[in-house]
Length: 284
Ligand code: FAD
Image 1 (cartoon, rainbow, N blue to C red):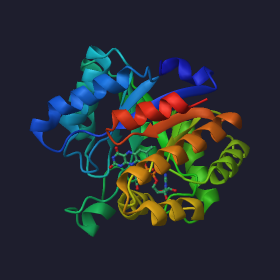
Image 2 (cartoon, rainbow, N blue to C red; image 1 turned 45 degrees about the vertical axis):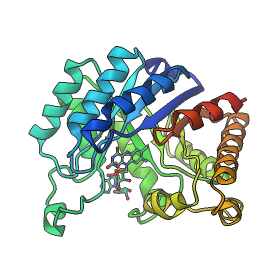
Image 3 (cartoon, rainbow, N blue to C red; image 1 turned 180 degrees about the vertical axis):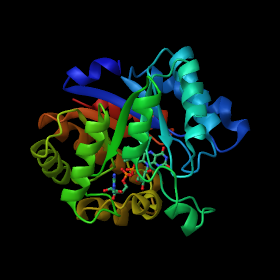
């Protein structure tokens, strides 16, 4: 359960994204049915940076919470939102019994001008967290970045804002994806030294196709260690071998994290239940 997690030193959770097309909703529900059989502590649902798919996020989070009776966490971005927009979504979430949000700023949507971005109502996730804590009863988590956020001037400043998120009411952090556990261990130590006391959940993205390195990973700004780059170079044209090697890499990352006492694991499962179940079966 999500609420118990704050007092435990291990947990397992998954992240899914809403389908792009309305017609794909039933497939998405089937994916969620499969994922819930793996008994995660919660499943989180992503949200469009501009708020475009907010209804889909609420609908999917509601399905997880009310049909599957698994705790749902709804991501919520504020980059293109007014206070009224945010309250509309949080009211819907509270109405359907979803109690936990991941409060994010979001990236500048493509159709937003620089001027609109500069004048945005919620400049940062810290402002959203403060607003949510003042105006809703939702539990709040936030993001963190083991290799620092690409816009941050330094790791120290990024961690100082992380501390501000905790002070504003964030009860847990979920990390950006990373492929070198050493980066995560170093980051957690620095965050703890800066006063972070709430759980820091490790975000793990299995790389099952070499193309992912060029898209998702570049966007996230995560560095790719030689070992993973070599796997992609070796198996880039062999989909089955690439999938197996990528899954094995993620399993090794997770088992090493657990062995080192970092037991909170969040799998960016890319709506792939078979892959997720293979990983779960191999986690020690
Ligand atoms: P912020 O915390 O606002 O940080 C952005 C930058 O501003 C950083 O450099 C930070 O150091 C700095 N900063 C923070 N607070 C302040 C402050 N008070 N004053 C000055 N500077 C400050 N995107 C989506 O669109 N939808 C999703 O569902 C989604 N889910 C995500 C889940 C996770 C676990 C993570 C790690 C990221 C996710 N993202 C998602 C991506 C995220 O929206 C982007 O990384 C975005 O660029 C930053 O969002 P943030 O909430 O971390 O921003």
